[in-house]
Image (cartoon, rainbow, N blue to C red; front, side):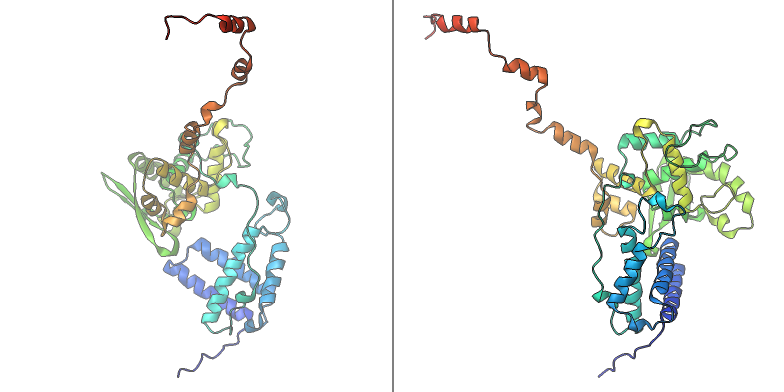
Length: 385
């Protein structure tokens, strides 16, 4: 008979330090992305403050976890310098549920390492459902809007521009980054990578041959997939690598990470996800007004999936392109396909029965009374039997 494992009574501070060390190891191994690791580190550091660093971890109960979640939700969101931008005090339900997932992962690790006798998340209250209106900025663009965005990204911005309507800062006239921005938006729209995948892409990840160019994308959990670039997309990549990137890389020649990175900022550093969102917002601000609406890199990922399925591509192919292990996940990315919905409405059997008001009035008028009387008194034609 095997003896049960012996409980290791560690403090919250010791447990969180050890756990974050394991997170860093998984990040180096490629199991976790750097963005996910930063999210875990931020959440677990905040959990340590909420529970008390000197407290023994095994003494934490489900009620303690609930109390920590409530205090987390009601505290200001430190990601916003101006809380009014968020629209409400405290943190949103979605943010709290993300924090809860980080806490759940931490206590699962603690139970496996015998820091707790039982996982207190078993007795914590269930997570709240995310409610609220449709987040339009995260939905797919229509085909015409996506084409308008590509055309806008291919056109260098004018030195004289109106005040941005999306809240994005206007680009400086001495920063000619249109070639880079066009490549970024084209990659997001055509291939649908995650914004984190694009930000950490290296030049070595692209195999450039005379006939084809392939991109080896490192996705979630260290998984990789290889996608083929179309001819125009490969040409946009070559133009950026030949003309703009060498000038940007020369500004930080001593930065090893910048020498590897595909996309660089004006100062020669590797671009981050926030900078990609900002350049997308600037491009959206320049779009024709009928198509202009707030959008995100994740919405462009939805756009890729939706437009490919609308063109008849198999969902399995789209799932492989997006890096999804299950086509059920891809199904979540498929927004309403406008063309199919419009065709269904036009072919509805009752659509033709709805008359215009003037047609309805004319049909509702009774026939002329004199004609009615004459037709009623008319003698039957004897030749008709």
